[in-house]
Image (cartoon, rainbow, N blue to C red; front, side, top):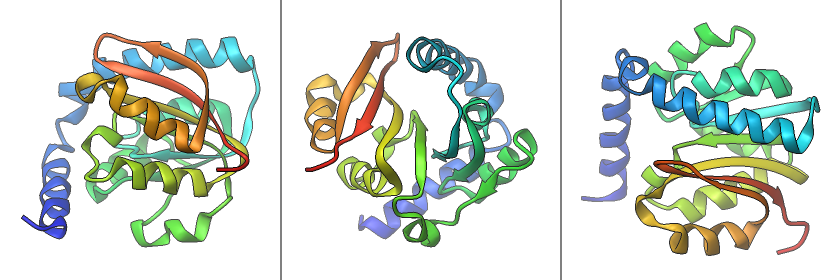
Length: 183
């Protein structure tokens, strides 16, 4: 299977899942968001960023939280159907198309990515892209499923980000990360 076929299969999977995603995973995702929000409040209090990107927004569960900490919310997902559902949760969110991500280099103050990168065919490439999308000293709030293990994630993350907070949840690792100034 080549990379394009893999991408199409993942896109098809999430497009087909979109109508029932919240029913199947909503409670689990909301639990993660509550933990992320508690940690955020401890670290940053009531700080609100200018521009935030929900990288892998899915149906917008995480975008709701992002709208509390960002004046402008941008959403990105490989599934157009998921983005359509997300639009109903955060009305003023600005969807970003896959081919348009390159127009947003150094644009975002904060990127939120909840349970996304473990499904990527190249998570390091995604981390590098997020690094490029963030402004200097930008914040990445990242959760990944634990199945690949901390020994896999930590070295990848440390290439691009400084870890300011780490939390181990039942199924996920949750990181609060600051973009490194120099690689």
